[in-house]
Every structure is written in C-alpha cells, then in structure tokens.
Image (cartoon, rainbow over all chains, first blue to last red; front, side):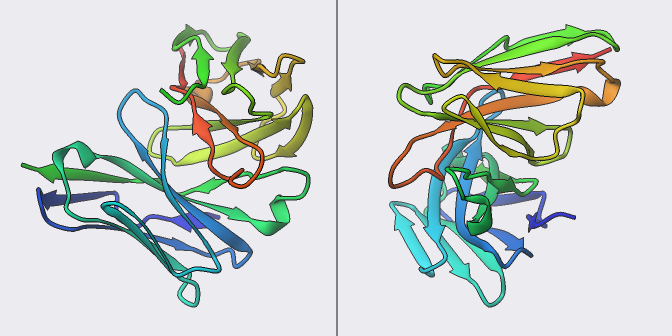
Length: 117
Length: 114
C-alpha cells in the first residue's frame, strides 16, 4: 500500500521553461511534506518542505504547493536549468509517528526530470 | 557533501552471507535513519535510532538488525542474505530543534548479492 505516489516516472522540459512535478498521498495524518533531489551515485539532497498549515512555500526558483483537500502537492521549478536534471522524491511525515523524536519519512518512487538545453 | 558518511561504497557478497554497513551522522545529529532503495522503488524506511536507542521500525526484515553506538555512529547488519536484498542502503541523520524532518543523507552503500 503506497501512501505517497508519484505517478509520473519521468518528465522532460526545455531549459528556461517551468517544470511541474506532482505527488499524491493517501494518509490524512501526514502533516509535513518534503522534496528531495537525487543525482546518480549520490544520496538524496533536501530541497524544500511545507507544513500542512500552509499551502505554498517558496525558495528561489523552487515553489511547493499543497492542496490538502485533494491530498496533492506539487513542486514548481522556474526557470528550469540543465543542472536540475535529477530524480525528485516527494516525502511525507505523520504526526502520529513523531512521538519521541521519531520523524520517519515515507517516500514516493521518484520522478526523473530531464531539462534539455 | 551532506556530512553523513557511509562505508563501504560498494559491497558484493554471496547468498547466505552476513554483512555490516556503517554510517557516521553529521556532527551533532542524534538521530540516524536507515533506508533501503530497491530497483524502481522509492526509499523504504527500515529503522531509526535516537541517541543510542531504537525509536521506530519500518519494514525491516528479522534477518536485519541495527545499532547506534555511544559515539553516535550506526551499523546495519544484514544476515542470511538473499538475492532480493540487493539494493542501495542509505543512512540519514537529522538535527534536533526546529526542523527535525529535514534528514541529511549519506551517499549510500550499494549491496549486490550474487
């Protein structure tokens, strides 16, 4: 039972255009969401996060939108650059798992973003 | 560089064998998490330690175990290895305080079971 779903295995965009990566979740207890970027042969790198009390969080070229009623979040990258080409993972954390400093993350399967020059 | 180190980088072993993966968290981080990434799968949470104590368990097999030592480094022990255990194993650590969700990952250990 996959609680965090990234339904697009891959996405290809042109340099300078917007990249939109999507993520859906099923567990209504999730209240904190994160995006990680992963290059080949490296570990995931934290990119941006959002609390469930917000619907938008922006950091430079990266913006995450959260629609709690639809249990959907998206990552927008504007403008996209070739260096953004990587696998992007959506992750979520649930209040009930946070007792006693437990902040376990549940990850989606990832979306491979390719930004073409 | 996340500050989390993992050794070895690659490990090739045979079915039935036992291996130990090692992780050193970022300086000051008390929590260590272990994740498994199999082919075409997302990262699956295995187990978490906080300051030497087990805090949470995920889909970790009984053949697998972990511990965190007084110097906060952690080891993941995998025994009676099967072909299906071939995967990338990541360790992550997280800071205390305001943003404990933001885990910092090591480069991973690629385990190949033949």
